[in-house]
Length: 438
Image 1 (cartoon, one colour):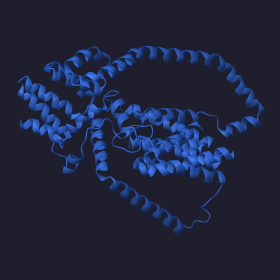
Image 2: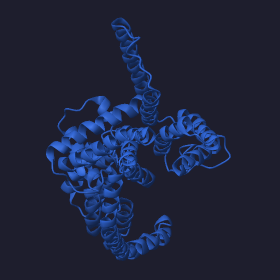
Image 3: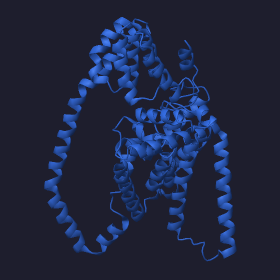
Image 4: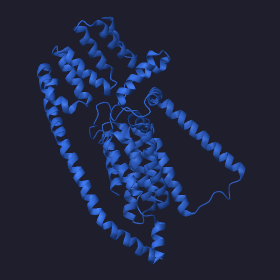
């Protein structure tokens, strides 16, 4: 119920932004809800929609049914305006699961009234509709779709080169190296050069998991998903299953696991799969001996649960204590950014030096620090910082600044190599070509 409430709040928030009553969280987009981008925003609504739809259909309480119906209608009003094709597919997939569960619960059967000719006709019609819908969504934002295809193509090459993973948080750096090698090989087409970018995410969570953690980790992840889906089917929890399927479909085209609300709802959906199914409850009711047996098991588990809970709390406290200095460093960075934005680069370099040990995995910080060092004529030190940033980012601007640093140091061969690397990562940018000409 609470998750459906969050979906309703987000949908109303988006409608208010759409009609000019609220400001969005991004200057380039009119509607983002509480998110920073309309893509994750629409994806979250798509994940909530099947659960709201299930409550609307199944709830016996009139108030809750009306509340869920309002949430569904509000989400349906927002999703088309968000222009997120991935969210549309996710919402449709989750709704199909809920609809299938509704048909199963009603005990309806279409097999008796369906002849072979009718089955072929219906099947062909569904395939044609899917093809037309896929073509329409592709041409709706063709360049974006071509960019995603290039990202997936290069990501598969990274997996082939690093089957055991490149490490958590290192996707972008490994991707940049692979994309530069791909364009340098001369095998890329003009369209690929035109749509190429420098993505922070793989726009497919399964490929990104395989790149960062390896193929074995991806298989373990699939194992968890399969176990959860089986439990939900046994429990006939179609609403939770629909939301999980919507999340998994959305993960094929976006980056939900890099956004905290999706991780929260994903953990919640997995936890619902551990609930006791209605069939087990019915068997316990029919057989009192099973109730006694389960009670004894629970009594034995009472000794273990407090110990496990205490251990988890200790681990959580330890992790929080370890991360508190990082939190303090983030606050200092937030306060000291005024020097960078004011163009006081020498002061910025001095302040950022003490923050570097804690924030050397943050791309934005590393770029600001490296740029400040470059502007204050500490070119060699700037290149060390920017080289660290290039390990975890595929932003060609890093190589542009490194090239200018090498030029200032009169190391022209290295300057040329850096700028050529920038043109290979994203060939459609003009600035590195301008620097090369100079």
